[in-house]
Amino acid sequence: MYTTASAEGPAGSRRAARGRARANTSWLVIAWLRNGAGKWLVTRRSATKSSYPLAWETPGGCAQAGEDSVTAVMREIREETGIVLRPEDGRLLRSYRRGERPSWENPGFLDVWVFDVDVPADAIALQPGETCDARWETREGILRLIERGEFTPTREYPHYVELFREYP
Image 1 (cartoon, one colour):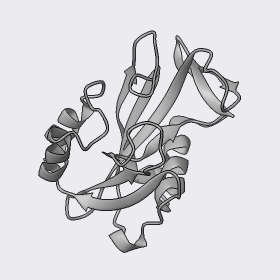
Image 2 (cartoon, one colour; image 1 turned 30 degrees about the vertical axis):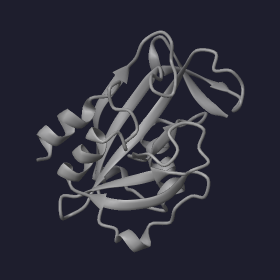
Image 3 (cartoon, helix red, strand yellow; image 1 turned 90 degrees about the horizontal axis):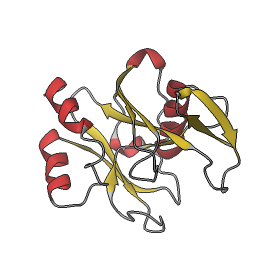
């Protein structure tokens, strides 16, 4: 089960069976993780992913039935990287309400979180089938990945501009 959101946003969410057509819109959550050196964690999508295989991204996914935003993002990060986050180390950077035709690039709702966390790269546990690599990257390095088309599409979510303005 995952959570779909109504036109009122995640507060009007309801349950839907995974693998079925999404009756309304999805509620996605992602997290930008920043370490003490000011670098950001990026993960690489598995080669077996149907959309954007081997592209770099910031980890996240769909909220599941009954989850609030912070619970969903903390679960997704733990599943995809093995990193256990604490709610008090994060803050909601931005919430998006997207267009009427949600898709992977354009879900109905997206919450973007920022967490401060120090975890060595070799301690990250990748989730088979989801992620195949992870690294701590500088702001400039992420911008290069975006410019080269090696990062999941950002045109729908230009929040990284806001992120890098707030966290130079």
